[in-house]
Image (tube, rainbow, N blue to C red; front, side):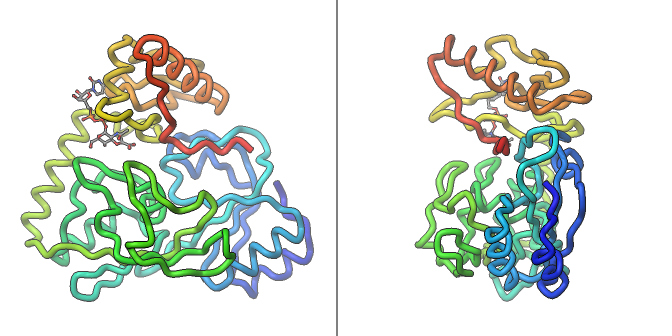
Length: 302
Ligand code: EPU
């Protein structure tokens, strides 16, 4: 979608919003799949409401992009523009045990920065790709850690009230790969309360998680991490593996040989290939295991 409205174009400089034309979502997502649209990069949180009002008034649909690590986007010219927070500098400010983190900050760099300042707890999250905001929205987790456990406070743009709001931990529910945030809420900053630990000890934990991940996940390949959530008490990866589906493919969309819940773009996979592979594997698992797997990957198809 191209923004043609003069009203919007003329307002952007004052709002400190940068317009990038005809951006390919294939280049902004870890799967390397997705069509083109205009991208609006927001440097000032206070501009968000005015920007969204302008988009609404002009009938311009929009979606919020985090780090693009857990996302599958349809091909072709997209029927919406994409909004993204500009990368802040610095992304993290520390005060005693509390890290105030901009939602656009990279999660891995945040974990490392906190570690160097003797703040631990998030070692398990070290290899989880994407932004802190994206991790927060879905309560990302790995190796027994989930980001929600450390949240003290979140500042966000709330779609329901159209206001910037600050929520305390008790006002948010964090479950397995799920939170009480609405799909179009936009995470802005988060305060994480982290336990003090010596750097060397944190580093050991980080190294251990990195090793485990390298041994079991297809790290160098284009993927969105796990495609499905694990059903209660089971591993989707193991279930798919048990059906002999490693290497199974639709076009260039392929079930990883290393971890069966990772679907990789092995070349020039289209969104249709990937969606067909997801539907096919889900159906096979349903027929044999009697369980309907739920997507963990977020799909932008309209
Ligand atoms: N397994 C297989 N075959 C496979 C994959 C796994 O037999 O192809 C077996 C493993 O051998 C193991 C069990 O299944 O006995 C569980 O596997 P793993 O430890 O890899 O964990 P998982 O349940 O598949 C979850 C998360 C990952 C996270 C790891 C480590 C989900 C959907 N996945 O995977 O998160 O990194 O634990 O904590 O919750 C993600 O969310 O994108 C993600 C990758």
